[in-house]
Length: 213
Ligand code: Z5A
Ligand code: MG
Image (cartoon, rainbow, N blue to C red):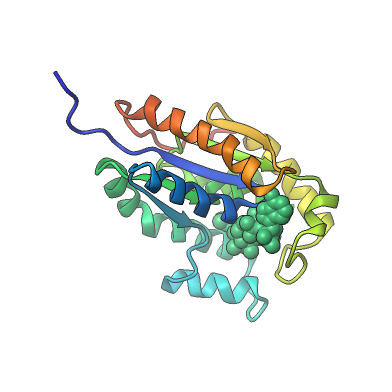
């Protein structure tokens, strides 16, 4: 019998700063929609919500907040969208997500005053991505790209620490991709992985994040 309800895939782009995550997320959604595959982009932080407004002020250094408190805000910003993520995926829409829990944990735990376990706890229970494409770029390449250095966290020493934390978070749903390619070549590489994942998971239940260190 023909299948009637196929779920969409939950696909996350993570990786180093300026590795091209936002650029690639937009291009992936555009290509999927051109192929008549329903797809939408979500970005974290989502700076448009009330919680996101506080995060934006923090990142642009307009306000200071204690490290644990800002970590919980980043997490709450994901939980605000959790019902919508489920709704979209179950209705067959593939979500291409620009940063997710992995950034949340890597950035806060890189501050050293907060341990990894503590950072993971508020993320557990969120929808687990079917695929995380981790865009890897060297620090030298990163600094050549536009805008680096304007917001909080944008310095090479801290980015190095973040990179080490990301290493600890790479699980069974991760694929690392060399991001030092031109935009078009990189997109061709990513779309193949996205199309395969959409096909592979359409009958599978969406799992939950369960970090356990
Ligand atoms: N953060 C956190 O602490 N906790 C959390 O839970 C979350 C985030 C979710 C803001 O995030 C900060 O929040 C971030 C992590 C922290 N801190 N830092 N650092 P954001 O996602 O809003 O950050 P962003 O401003 O979008 O920067 P980004 O994500 O690092 O950049 P990107 O999206 O990877 O790159 P891009 O914007 O697509 O491209 C950057 C530039 O490179 C741009 O000029 C492009 O035209 C160019 N580009 C893109 N691709 C290429 C290629 N292939 N070749 C050459 N040039 C390229
Ligand atoms: Mg971005």
